[in-house]
Length: 263
Image (cartoon, rainbow, N blue to C red; front, side):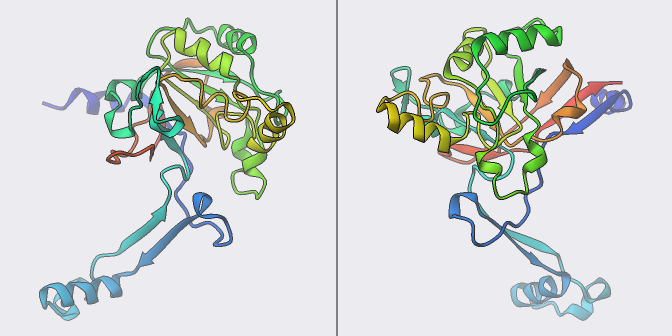
């Protein structure tokens, strides 16, 4: 008997919402840099001979296994943040790391909030978030995954990508959390508005709660950053799968995020 998921595959469409893990310029600071070292089949054959004494002539076409070695931060490319990323304690308790979060959070109905009209540094407010969900025609339920479509994924390879995006206010983040949302994401560098603008405002006003305000809102939630292709999705009627890598004690985990749509 065929597995029901195999049967269902013929009636679904899967949309990739992730950027590829690819090498970045070496001039970038470590927290932005990704290094991929590619080992070809000849190198693999040499490794097998060193490990097992089997020469390349005994392998198909004289080739051994290809392999890659990755050097990247857990917040590089498309990834899921855990509460531990925001603070060591959240809501009076030790913050959860990425490997401690419930798997049920990462497979749930999704809704897209259109924020393409928002300027860089003009964060989505509580009212705009509420109106955006209403405009999608979706009735928000606990456990839903909310995705903010800013359109800034188009600038992913540009040097100024980190300072683009509208971001989301702390108040809007709290509103989502109060409605049972535990995973929320955006197709920009950060869920918060660009940090250079937040830094300038925080220093000028000399107030806490401005810089990194949506991250440090003291809530145990997860956020997906650096999504892609949200424009390929309808406003609702799809399922999001966004399981992060199980990094022991990690503040985040890279993820292959996809949307599953019924045909």
